[in-house]
Every structure is written in structure tokens, then in C-alpha cells.
Length: 108
Length: 510
Image 1 (cartoon, rainbow over the protein chains, first blue to last red):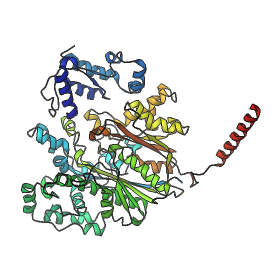
Image 2 (image 1 turned 120 degrees about the vertical axis):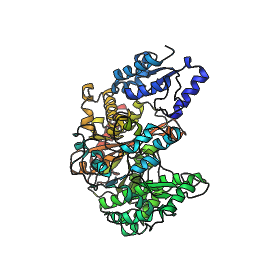
Image 3 (image 1 turned 90 degrees about the vertical axis):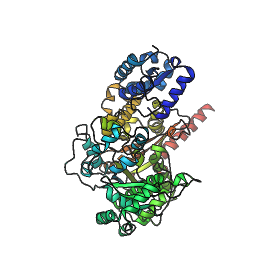
């Protein structure tokens, strides 16, 4: 995850409380989505950014996961995400995200 | 009349030492984790020059193989060298690092590059033997200094070292004592960009068969910025490179737009020529040292060689309609506007579907799309997937949503309307333009009727706006030099018919 984004996530967690923050991921690949999820839960796996060694344990979902999809207005979702939903390997993304959530999320 | 694609060039410079010393993944790691395993293992993963030349995607880039041939090579590509690979191709070459350092010195007008004289003596003949390097360029390479002098500049004067096969052979000095925009780091980055742009310009002139004096305007569309502390990015890489390439009748300027830069610049060039302001415009870009080894950590972790070990450059010559060469149709321009929005759906809609709809064309009326043509060998191990394929899937999904194809046809769309990616991940370099050389030939041979070139840019990187960006244009077969600005016979008939209908309708109403 981009170092600047790591910094912003860390600041939001401090400002609002880690239990009140949900990180929504939009990566196009399961692996990339998993890496982002890992960064905001277990810490930066590349040891490069501000979240290195910081286990925030934040709640995180990919925008294509069913739990998040049901939160949206259907028409807006179709307009903004519908096309990508057809393109992405949603099952792979769900697998990656769930395994990270199960292991590291502190607020579910 | 529409302006035409007169020809194109694509060049690479193999620069493994710059991967270690100038790529930001590596320079950042040296600050954050100086003792990391990655930095220790890095050198062992660098490719030899021969391996770099024999690499399938590189051979495609310089024109020794068509992307359709690459599509038949079993993935991954890095462990399947291409037989009969060559340094030189029909579009350009893969220049070895030593010769590229000499070219960089030939591009240095302010004596900031100092080279070890033994190094110069050892490689000058090879440099002079390059078919596009003219005598006046060779003459710009100075004899060199003692190595101890180079060491002094690197150790005591903040110079950036230039290395060959692990040894210090020269340096780029700072061009000002306190101005950070003229620091050794910035001078190094800019001179390397300029040098690769010069090489691209030289090949473009050769490939098109025009005279150097025919080029009237040069647009540089790379991603670097030159200028001092009072005008960071003040620019004109274009004219600076044109000077070394010997384009004595050309002026020029720089155009920037992150990865979308080349597509913007090509539309500007096509418009300049169509308007008559200039008869012949070269759109050029050099490579980016900062991006060398950008995904190196993932490549090393997965036991791959460092695949981002080349600076890349390209140049496209746009000229007045010659009645033969494929044209840029300025009536079909895709544009991501301020109001478009950044959802992928909006982006692809604005760049692909909207411009076609305006001229009553469907997505399937375009034979080949050339969006972000990154080599998947580089991006897949880094978790970024197959970027061109992702683009084709998005275009296909949009076609399904618009009812232009069945959902079942989504599977075959990438193969029918797409290409396998081969371009190095040098930001602006893979963005639509790598196919222009092949597109020109494929259209001339009648293999395809048209191609859409799509450039996309991530503007947030500059922290000035969160907006996305992109533009697209269509290259089509030459319409036989007919005056596209006039009205065709068919259109006149249509207009008369409509006028008569309206007249009849108004009579009936009365």
C-alpha cells in the first residue's frame, strides 16, 4: 500500500478510534486486495511504510464483497461498480479478504 | 485532411547499474532498511545484457517480433529466451549500458558528466559503430578524467555515481551548489531521459526516411521536469533533445499528463499538422530512471530476475497526409473530463464508448484496442495482474452493458480486439503508444482496419487533484487523401433529402 495512504489510515484510526473505521478496498486482484487488507490489520508486510509493525486490526472489505454490496443503493452500485463486478474474480477476492479478516480483524 | 502516422521508433537502454543506484524502490529501501535481505540479494538477480536482448517482450518492443507472436509464447516469458534475438530491430535497438553512458555524456551541455578516461577509451569505438550515432554526436564525447577525480566528486561533492559492471566509471555532478532542482540526482534523471529521447528521435528519422530538416516541431511527453529553483518544470526537453539529434529546423515544447502524456501529445501533434501550423511533428519521450526495478522486491522474493532493467523511449512522426499512411481521425476523440468521475465504468465509457457513439460506431467496430500495454511478466508477480487483459475485460463488459455483445462473447473479446502486453513499466511508455508502430503496418497490410489508442493517467500522484485523466484517439486506414473537411456526395444527398422532407412537412402543416 502507498506510504501516504498508510499514513492517512493510521491518522484516521487515531482520530476516530480503530473500532469506528472501515477500510474499503478497490484493488483489481485478490492478491493486491489481500496485501492492502493485511497492511491495515496486521501491519505493512513490505516493512516500508508507517504501518510497519502496527497491528491496527481494522475492519476491511473489498467493494465487491456481498457484505458491503448490500449497503449500497442498487442503482448507484450498478453505475459505479457494475462493470468492474463483471470483470473481477470476485470469489478469489472474497477468499483473500476473508482469510485476512478472520486472522487479524479485531472488531468483528 | 487528417494528418498521418509517418512512422515510429521504440528504443531500450539496458541499465542494470541504474536499477541499483537510481531506482526509487532501491533508494527508498537504502534509507528505510539499509541492511535488508532485498538489497543484499538484488545484484544476484540482475540480468546480463544478452538475457535482456533475448527477452521476448524486449524483442517485440524494438520490432523484431509482432505482439501476436508473443501471444503464442507460453507464460511466463522471462525463462523462455527468444531464438535469433538481436540488438537491433526495425523500430530501434537495445543499447548496452556502457554505450548509453557515452550517449548521456553527448547529451550533457553543461559539463556535469565526468567519465573515467579508461572507460571512455574502452567503449568509444562501439558507441561510434552504432548506425544512428552520427559523427557529430561521437565528437561530443570528451576524453575523460582520472578515476580519482570521479571519486572525489562522488565522495566530496554530492555527485551521482555512474557504474558499469559494478565499478564506478563516472559521475553526474550537481549543476548548482544549493538549488535542489539542479542537484546531481535531478540532473542524472533528466539527462538519462533526454538521452533516451535523443535515441528515439534518431531512429524515428531513420525509420520514416524523412530528412532531419523536415521535422518542424518536437513535443516531449515524458514524466520528468527540468528547470531551476525559480521555474521547476520550466522545461523544453523537446528542443534540448532535438538539438543533439540534429533536427536543426525544429522548435518544440514539452507536454505533460503523467501516463496519459503521450496520447495527449499525439492528439496535439495531429491537430497541429491538420491545422497547417507545422507540416511535420515528432512526439518523443525518454525513459525514467526512478522506475527502474520498481517491482524488484516482488521479483526477487519470487526468484525472478529484475525485469525492469531498461530505460525506454519512443517517438512517433506525424506528418501531412501522403495518401498512403494511416491517419489519426480527430473526429473520434475520447476524453475524460473534469465532470466524468473516476469509477472505472465512467472512465472506460468516456474513453471508449462515448467517442464511438458520437460517430455512430460500436465498440466492436474497432479492430484493436491499445490501452495500458504493460508486460504481464512484470506486473503479475507483483500482484498487479495482467493490465492489458484487465482493460480488455472492462471494454468487453461495457460492450455487454450497452447490449453490443452477448455476455458469452466477453471471453473471446480480449483475443479478438486486444493484444498481449509487452511494454516496460516506465509510466508513460506503455500507455497506448507501443502499438502505434505495429498498428501502422497492420493497417497498411490490411490486417486490421483501425485501432484505438487509449492513454490513462493517475493525476493524484502530483497531489494537485484527485481527478483521473485519459484521452483516446483512433488510427484508421488512409482515406485516399480526400478532403475530410469537406462534405461528401452522400452527405449532400442526405442534406437535400432532409431539406425537401422538412419543406414538404411545413407545406402539409399549412
